[in-house]
Image (cartoon, rainbow over all chains, first blue to last red; front, side):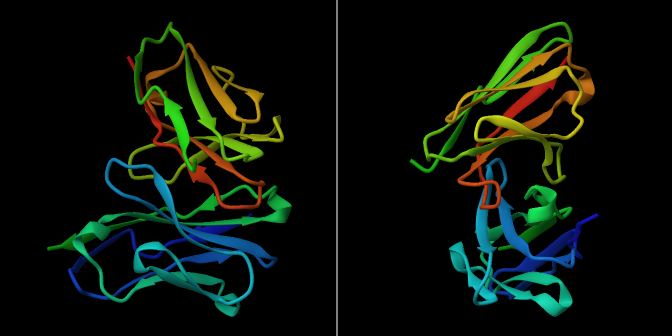
Length: 114
Length: 112
């Protein structure tokens, strides 16, 4: 069965620090990859997605992610975080042979200290 | 219009009550979803409608009953819920089943 692993459950950074959140998935076929963010008290929002093409994808709010097929990874990065980036971040994957059901990672709680 | 609208935002119901959650989108999306989310956890898929047909039911108890009256609307009928069903219920939609999902704000349900 497919699974998604997010390595860090809690990350605490100071403002202006660089961010990298890890995401690995277990599936050998073609996948679509997503990062969602849930700010406190708000709904899940799509940060970025990868379907095909350039493995470096840019999303909203200065986030980017790199798909490395050989490592089954889709890590999220931001060069300089802000206090407003405090949120829960979820990596998710879907594939054609599971009816494109989204498989979610456990989430990473990111806290940015002002 | 890029929103998925859910009503109500909050709901408190007793274990013998019957209530319904509503979801609406006007983006022309043909797949709609109900998810359940407990605090600090990822969403758990409950139901998927694709082209108004129920395509995935993740073995959800029968006290939850989905309905898709048309391509823009999705309902979740609740009956005889248990306190452990208290959670945030999220509706989402996507253009096609394999494209990105857009989520509503959710209904915070408390069963007493």
